[in-house]
Structure formats: C-alpha cells, structure tokens
Image 1: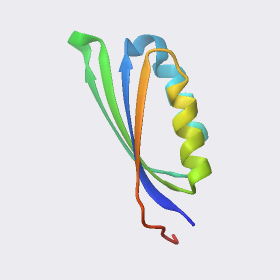
Image 2: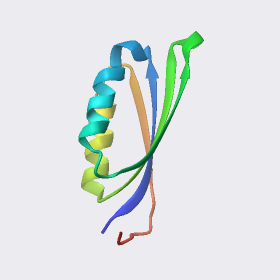
Image 3: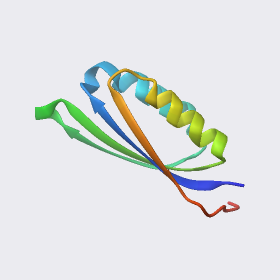
Image 4: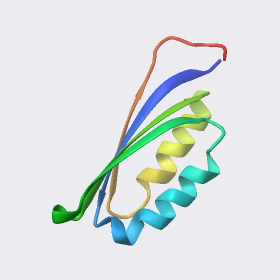
Length: 85
C-alpha cells in the first residue's frame, strides 16, 4: 500500500549540490506529486519541500539518496494512513 509523505530539504550552498539534487528528484518522478523551492540567495541556502505518494521503500530510498548528498539536510514526514491510489 502507498502512503503520502512530505520531504523537506535544506541545501547549504545550493550551487554545489543543486544539479545532483535535481537529478535524484528526476529519477523518482513517478512518485512525486508536487515540489516547492524557496531560494535564500543572500544566505546561500535553499529550502525545498517535496510531496510524494509511494510505498515505504520508494520514499525511504528517495530520502536516503537526498540525505547522502553533501551539505543537504533532509527530514521526512510519512502518513500513518495507507491509501490506494
């Protein structure tokens, strides 16, 4: 069964990690339902929120790959309710 999750990411110095971050996101495009990014150029930080619908393995895989990038902090909130979309 699938769950809805929200992945929040903070990119410190996004100029170094943005390209790889986007490549990982693109490889999971099948589960991504929405993305919002806010650049804080004066602080050289980007805040990104991604909403996904997938099984736990897919969500955890995406979160793990993003979290392994240098200068990227990731937190994920996953719904307790299972859905069938």
